[in-house]
Image (cartoon, rainbow, N blue to C red; front, side, top):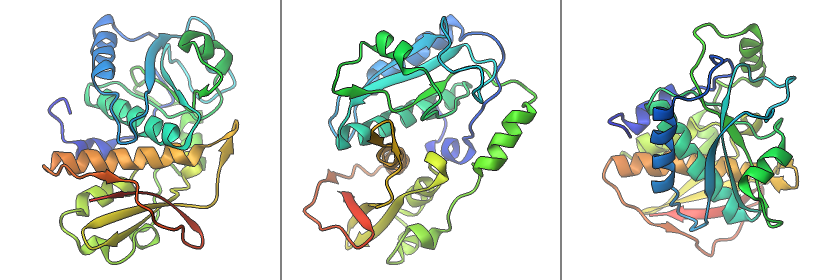
Length: 262
């Protein structure tokens, strides 16, 4: 991705909440727009639309935790299970690309004014805006609020490998880096709702049945899409073109089956 390894971008990615008070340069905006238009494909075959917009009106309230940002990335998807999965996958791909060209970001699943963005995106009744992100240039010195939010959210913390993966998946050299990339994926309230179980040559992905409802949709489906993006991009970087499969597998006691990869 822009001559940088995806796994390295994932390992180094961090949310930025304090920005230089200036919009994106025309060059960076065009570079991002060109990348967006060419990279909206996803394993769920859902149409996603993403735009870059200047904050001519307050998209994030002044009491929010973002300071100085003048440009935002936002998008829309169908309010369906596959739509939310696809949104997480595609939007995270854009987040990682931004990082590769020196643009800072921060996932925001709330605290933004949907009425303004609804007009910009021409939102239909069956569509939603699950999340947005500021896009800009990180201020050299983070604000005290930024540091406090990061500490409270425990953004740098991740669950241990054995809490997320089963059947000794860490012993599989083919998937090792992709599993670690998935483990590092960001999620709402840092819940990390994914569970992974291997079966011969197939990897099965489940979501814990603890829905985190936000504005009428399960934000954890977006989280799953983010995790799938990490896994898929690292596998592709290693030369593996696996197939995502919707298999007829039953849910387990506390986990919901989402999709298989093999």
